[in-house]
Length: 156
Ligand SMILES: CCC[C@@H]1OC(=O)[C@@H](C)C[C@H](C)CCCCC(=O)CCC[C@@H](CC)/C=C/C=C(\COC)CC[C@@H](O)[C@@H](O)C[C@H](O)CNC1=O
Image 1: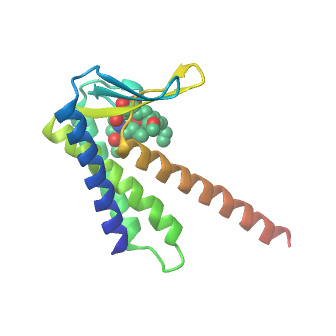
Image 2: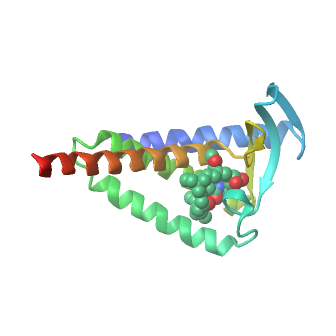
Image 3: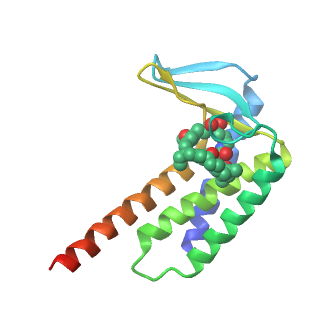
């Protein structure tokens, strides 16, 4: 149950930040937060990461619905000792729905977090993307870690 509340919090935070960007900035406007590292740049993306599949909204709708259904199934099946796994699923659920709302109502995704990793201008993203990437990262770490644990058990 708490997992859905966390997902809802992510969705509200994501939509609130996007609403502020849309309301107070024009596309292309840039605010410097940390020179040469972090900017707030109002941007729109009709595709997925790195702008792939521009305009393929039906593909995004179908993939997002599948992702959301899978996440809900996994959340429903969580055991009490899988809190970190549940946290990751909630982050991904919130992120996926956050971008889904944009794709349905705006037909594009609002992005504004503009970081320069060294000299590389990383694609501009948003709170929903961050939640998705952190969620994916936690699951990768859990999977690798469990793999290591199982290996150790076998070696015993
Ligand atoms: C984060 C997934 C992207 C997100 O997927 C979603 O919505 C999901 C729920 C639905 C998609 C239709 C399916 C995922 C397609 C796979 C994909 O894309 C490969 C992702 C790799 C990933 C490693 C996990 C890298 C990360 C990149 C970025 C995020 O860095 C923090 C750059 C984000 C900017 O290009 C920004 O313009 C993107 C824009 O906001 C729209 N966002 C999406 O499509």
